[in-house]
Length: 311
Ligand code: PPE
Image (cartoon, rainbow, N blue to C red; front, side, top):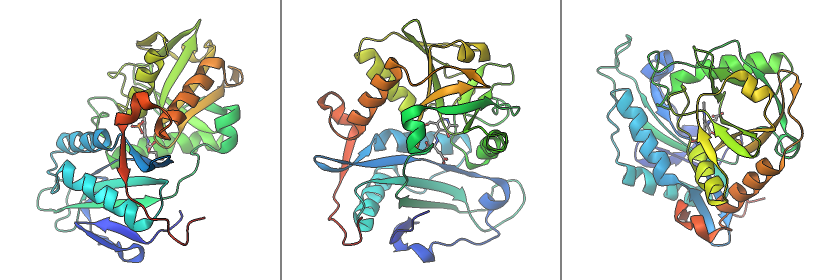
């Protein structure tokens, strides 16, 4: 990870190297935290954070599902995020707000622990590689099932859930694939380890519905709206793994992954990135980079004076 100058920690901007926690922190032992992943892009009007308000709303929802009271309001976290981007001088960066139970009492119950809130920012390039963005990636259905609605609330972007994702992506990578796709316990298509999934068949776009153990992705929501606006038909429904094998096009999306085409799943060739995928990828990048008036309301601007260190 590329280190920048500052990290926002519990209300203050502190030096990167000083952002430390105690090893007895509850969140370290039990994965009791919630987080967000947000991107800021360089646009013609300066550094713009994409759907910041929506990401912070999901952070609040995630915390609520863990019975966690966030000590800062969304407005305070928004101001902190914009301030951090300014302080680090990078118009283009990834933002990682995280809230977790800190140091106080150990034992599974989180009672008696403070809630710590941190926001990091750093430059993060393409999630699945430049080549993956252009040519598509190879994915594998995981033998690990995605956490179900009565296992851990999958609607919450909770840190502990990511052990599920870590196992899946590790298995896929060790088998020589770029990414894992997790199914629900019932066998329906859910998410990638860090992305939502879309298919295209006979010109119609499909994506698993929100009850299929998926994270309610903000990129997913963005793509549904953009695609409909472009005149595509988008259907949210349960999908089975053979829908992936037989699709004309498959792509993944997420804040980190943006729109990444999938060219092969379980050694079934889907094909090189198709016309619909490429159209949506371009429309998404135009939107986040401030080249689309239609979706300008999704951009929230930070003021960044160019840092001397900026490459
Ligand atoms: N599903 C999962 C499991 C997931 O982790 C993400 C985001 C998404 C869907 C898409 O959500 P959204 O970003 O709101 O469109 N994964 C984040 C973390 C990735 C990481 O490796 O860390 C991200 O993309 O920022």
